[in-house]
Amino acid sequence: MEDKQLKELEVFAAKIRRDILEMLQHRGYGHVGGSLSLVEAYAVIYGKQGKFDPANPKWEGRDRVVLSKGHAGPVMYSTLAEMGYFPKDWLMTLNDGGTNLPSHTDRNKTPGVDATTGSLGQGTSQAAGIAKALKMKGADPFVYLFVGDGELNEGQCWEAFQFIAKEKLDNLIVFIDDNKRQLDGWTADVMENFDLAKKMEAFGFFTQRVDGNDLAAVDDAMTVAKAHKGEALCIVLDTVKGAGIPFFEETVMNHSMKWDNDKINEATAEAIAKLDEIIEGGVA
Image 1 (cartoon, rainbow, N blue to C red):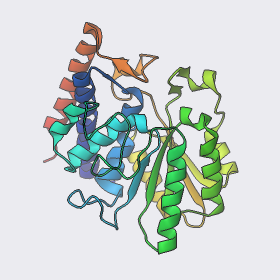
Image 2: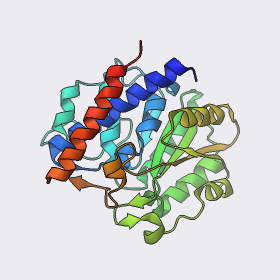
Image 3: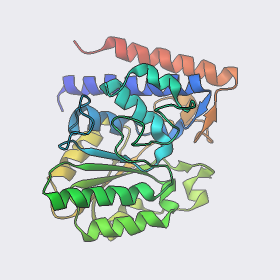
Image 4: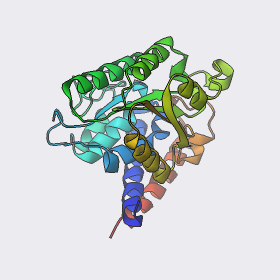
């Protein structure tokens, strides 16, 4: 990746991260940790690797994104807003009555959302079906599925993975957000995942494990995956829950948080100021 393009993605990621913080602070609560951990992957997909048309959200030639861990909706909403799918002031309506931006993503409410998700595990099956349908139609778009490491406690995920591998759906990339934490604590304590890369390989996936909070690493892994034909594809994103904001990274129970004290509000203000510096630095 050229330096200028990397810089553009860094600015894009900073905008997404800032929007997440502003949106959740305005709402007063929300799923911050698992939204921040996916920022770099979303920046790469929407800023470089994917095919999208914000002016035509239902364009048949578009790539599809399925956020199976639907509670991380803030990362998708922030990205779509920055892409121009809808006005940015919608972000301040998160979870309001009648909003187009519900807590979990809903394809009937939000332009640019391809799958209604939130009941954990079900997005994996939806993505498998979408990818299979595209194959049957002879269409070339990719499907990008995001599943959480805690979500892998759901057996439905593994049933879907078995189908994806059996059907050799090489038009679908499974991204596992291995951020080590889930609702009730560390994944290793709740339900040990063991070596996710080895497990996916055993299920029949061509698998890569990369630093999921490194833009260049994610981009390189996607390029390699797209060139690999005849096998199911998986990229295990080695991420940090709350990535990019030290305060949230260091807060163990950061799955969902409330903005109800001076400490969290001060940390948010400081983080937004630093992100604004990156954005204002911009690209020539």
